[in-house]
Amino acid sequence: MVAALAVHVLNVETLPQFRSEEFSFQVKYGDRNSCLRCQTSRFSPQTTDKPVVSRLCKQKPASLPAAEVESLCLFRLYDPVLPVVRLSLQRASRSGIGTCTVGKVSTSIKHLKGRQVAELSLRGRDSKDEIGRVSVALEILWVKQQDLARSLMLAAAEEQKDAYMIPAATPTIAGSLVDDYAKCSIASDVSVQAPVLTGIACGV
Image (cartoon, rainbow, N blue to C red; front, side):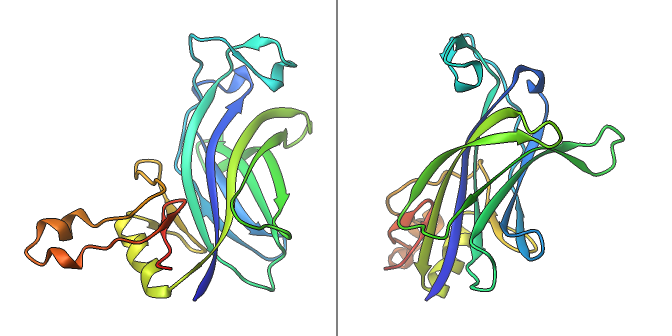
């Protein structure tokens, strides 16, 4: 069995000045000296016509830029790595070379049990003021190595240097993960059906 840390970045809300800008999150597992990294899909916060109540505006009605990120980063769990998850909100630098970090947030997973959903406050890189909020779901999964490899393939996961990322374009729901291509073939009995947790077939 393989222990994996699933970090599902659900959605984000930002201050008005970030509307329509293109961002991504760099998700890090571990501290500054020793960590694994994963980059989410890109997204662009937009406003809606319908007023909403936001904590960023002190509970006053407001329509703030928001975006559904829906990217899942999957890390191999390592004991030597400190049990902390850090997220950096990034955009392209003004020079057009590389990226710059706009905001950061971190949360501990030391006592993580089951699936935990948290709404975290994004703090500006320099001012430390709140510039947004991000919702994430955290979970430690125990999976069979062969089931994990098969599930990542079916979910079109993007292999990165330190992790795998399942993009927002790939639907991931709780239930059964089925290989539609196998179902359409003559050998329909080879289709994969396994319990799914945050989009990963666990094969329990």
